Image (cartoon, rainbow, N blue to C red; front, side, top):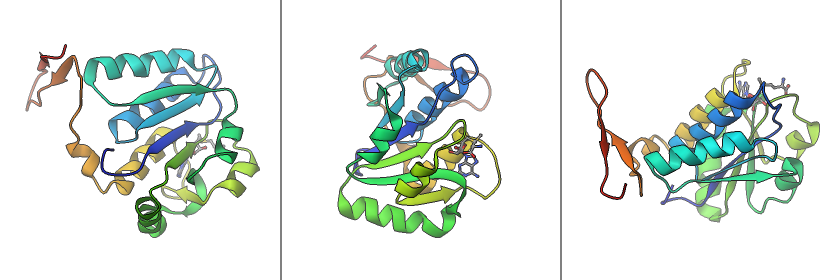
Length: 182
Ligand SMILES: C[S@@+](CC[C@H](N)C(=O)[O-])C[C@H]1O[C@@H](n2cnc3c(N)ncnc32)[C@H](O)[C@@H]1O
């Protein structure tokens, strides 16, 4: 978000076909809940296109990139790394430490979520291994709760730029308006 140093989300691994929706939803959730950028594996081009299409229609800024080596990206990241895992420290115990370090350092934060088995090197390289509960669930759910905790809910008030259309909240039904920039 505009008022904090960059937050990027790295999706580890992508099995074409099987992971298509999950990888797309990692990107969409990163965008909707305040991250600045998603970095997807290079075989997830379809997910990248879908997230870019949503950004064109509903606004940004939000960037999506493909990377040929997620592990090298994590190792070479110049900033802090949070790895979301059910085996990690409880989010409610470390969120303020992460928020303070991220805000004070002014350095970008990389939030890593897995798919298949995550290599142990990622656990070792991360500055924080963070569990959103210590129960197994999904990368999309873990990412959503983590980002909301990181931003303390401010992402819900975010304004979207250069949208073609916007949803007008309704008690019942659906209302979508074209914007002037569309
Ligand atoms: C379906 S899980 C598979 C994890 C895999 N079995 C392993 O052991 O590495 C996919 C991803 O969801 C996320 N995830 C699942 N449960 C989580 C939890 N309780 N807290 C945080 N992230 C979680 C993690 O990023 C994980 O890599």
